Image (tube, rainbow, N blue to C red):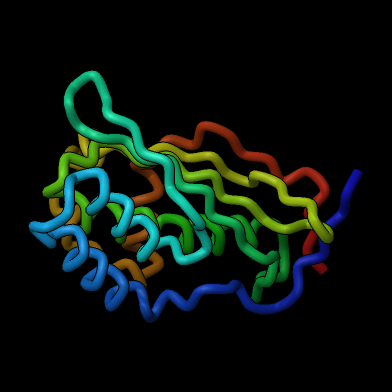
Length: 173
């Protein structure tokens, strides 16, 4: 079993998420882009650790996108539960950024594979999550949430479907 040791500092400062969201909205709004290109631009802006998001057209005519976010396992957490909360907040903020930015471009669902590097050349999906605009629209005012606010992102996280969660071999010291 691979064991990963969490250090100090989660990569990707949340204070920049509001700026990143505005930048992603501007990219997605560019009229010279097709819907899939605009959605991809928003996703790569909101998830800077992703190389190439994969999109697909859904039966409804809207779009879905799959993002693989690879993170270094660096944290301020003192426990595995603390690390999970940090990861959830970090992931929710980036999902919010993407979904809000690409809303007018027919983005209907977002899947994210959230991977930690646990050893040299070895990554592990700690979360695979799915967010749909249909479910978020049930949360009145979700587009006005603050991606840097822990409480707001906890609320958003409660409206995200966790498809897979695996923290095997990850410990915090």
